[in-house]
Amino acid sequence: MKNLWFFDNVNLFNLLCPHKFKEYKKCHSFDAYKKSDYIYFEEDSASKVYLIEKGKVKLGYYTEDGNEVVKAILTKGELFGEKAILGEEVRNEFAQSVDASTSICPIGVETMHDLMRDNKTFSLKIYKFLGLRFKKLERRLQLILFKDSKTRFLEFMKELCEEFGHDCEKTGDKVIVHPYTQKDIASLIGTSRSNLNVLMNELKEANIISFNRKEIRLLQKIA
Image 1 (cartoon, rainbow, N blue to C red):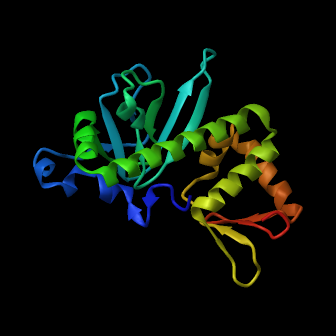
Image 2: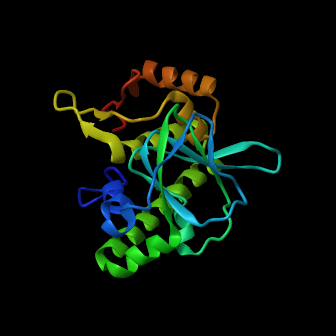
Image 3: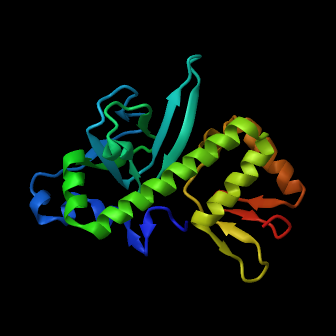
């Protein structure tokens, strides 16, 4: 799943954005959001899907106790709100900008259906994307519900390895150059930032990982 928003080395944003289609370009615009701005809330009408031109977006929901559960943090080129394509009428999650400057490309569901009807290859790529997205979210929720924090972290690292990793030619380590902050990772694996910091340092001392601000390495013994 190397970079989930790529299909056969095609950038999903370049594939879907209405600016790429003459018949939609004139009436299409981008929406700008600042940090903590919401793109949509739970219970909002689901009439659009969204592509991220730049920035990061957090998807999640709140439990009955008011606790936030983060389902995903998406970056440039990724699609969200996609369940509207399948007939979702009301949102069951929120979408929130987590960057100081996030630019979103909104696409009406009817426009998306028109594009899918007119291009079978395009349609197949969308359904492939939806299948991968649902599997990924299901796997992450299973980890949060049934695994301890160490296992959740290591499993998430292996997932990041599939998307953002490469082999170090000198050491054989898996090198992950990813777009997430420690706060992002903590949210995605269902722990606090302070607990994550303690856990990462423990794993570093045990020679299981090494890390800096820009990358995380899975050392040979677990990679």
